Length: 355
Image 1 (cartoon, rainbow, N blue to C red):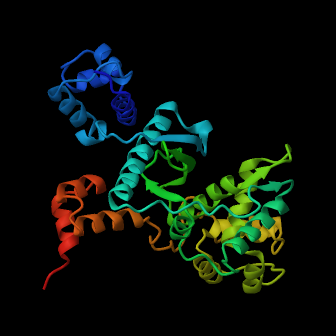
Image 2: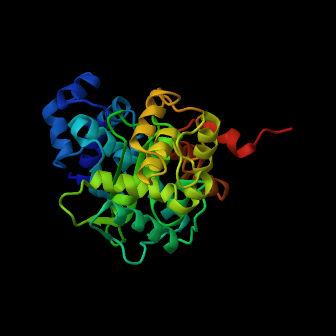
Image 3: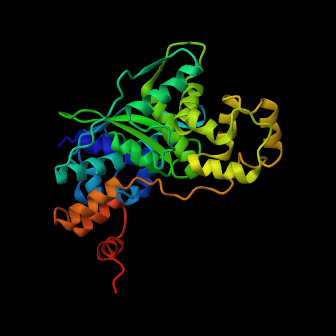
């Protein structure tokens, strides 16, 4: 009996676990040979129930994940820091993203709610010939999404409101983030941005804005580095020029620690990113920037001063699961499986703190 979906999921789960075919065979005490596992992955045959249970346990995935009928694929997968990311780490990340998106789309289908439609801004992708064009692209997107010049309180919610799935996963440290599209038969592709939980909240917000840049700009000048373009786009999107200049002034010779902390919290960015933004806008000189990084900011590259509270976690998927549970569309064990929590944790969340 053939099942290509089972095979693909088995292969992704094995890669996420960092196991070779031989390693997985050893993990299930050689219940089957590595060659048999290879045939499962190629969709040439299915394991018996006992072997399937052993495979799921060894790979730490629910049996239902391996046998899920969902036929979704990740298209246009783009990693950041790819030069430092091993093929093994890339495979682990891809499997984790596919697993989470499968559960996300599954609960949407059970509830009969569609993914928010991707609110692609008019005129995108913006044609970029210079770094100033990246600045203008960020300003245009803010206008298209009616954001004004105010700081963005929650980047995660903003992107999800505009039809972009946002995932926060435990990545290898070599991966900052990635973009991709979820492809399903008979459905429109869904854009996805993923960032790492291992990074600071400030870094996560910047990563989301940076990945958004990759989705909406098109670099036409071959002399420009796309990463630098998207870096400038993210800075301008999170710290709009006019509002930032209103707060700090047109020209400065120095900054004190307290002022920097207040402004970084105002715009939700790292202290280092704020200082680089001020240099790019010529509020401070390169020499002033270097002096700050040698002085009060000498440790900012490794440790964020006065970090932001972590209020940027995606919540929509979790809300949909609890909604389905409350309406008896799914069972308690199914909710626990979808959220990766114990049934006791789900019960406590449903029942509340009590009297």
